[in-house]
Length: 306
Image (cartoon, rainbow, N blue to C red; front, side):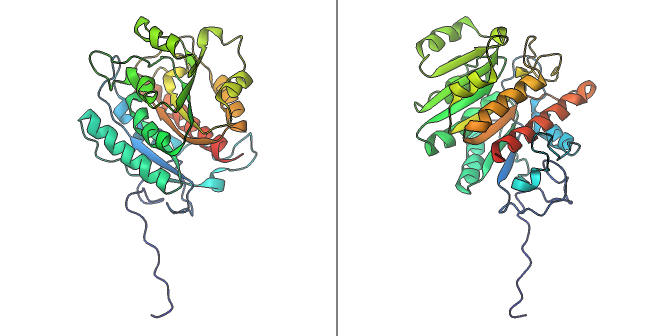
């Protein structure tokens, strides 16, 4: 009938609230992909993990756990989810060829950035991060990565592979306009030290062994005002809190410590994207799925709701 607008059809690239698991956060909501400010990219690629496996299931289990995360935020004293809205891509069929998988993720990140949305990638192993940084480094003349991690990830190659999860930050720093602030590091190899020492103008590291002597504000000052991309390898958490990851390390961050840092950084910086990687779900540790989901929601909330 003339004058009657057709009802908009849901975008089949995204999970539809109420039909196929709701996507991240798990609540029916009024946001279309076009209206949502954040697009979540589940990408369970796993190929180069060097100890425990299972990261391919990380995105699905984090999204499933997110359905149980309360939307009310005790810092903002409201439900900030409705301030920004989230649309979640269906997880794609991921090629087993490593470079092809990275190229596919780059295309998702590029589409998200071109649409003016906040990209939040859920991995999968940490080798995925440079695929998103490729897009961010092209968009911003200067970009700072805030890395939460147990490991330096600064090797040029690991076991003959330059695309390994152990090279994630080295490949990200291949872009000359990218700087790095790393937090929680407590496992680094001799192979990484020469590069680390030669690039102190681009790399600032807050080692876990020194966490009693540094403050969240010092980290925020090192990060600056942005643009900032957050990459959170969940093995940054202490192994007692986060055993469900491929290479758990003792001596790491605890929940309140990580949130204090995120609060300090997001209060002053322009956060332009994020990823959370390396969850390796384990049936005996379902709390780890929930912690990961709540962390993702906190990152979205702190980044998008000043």
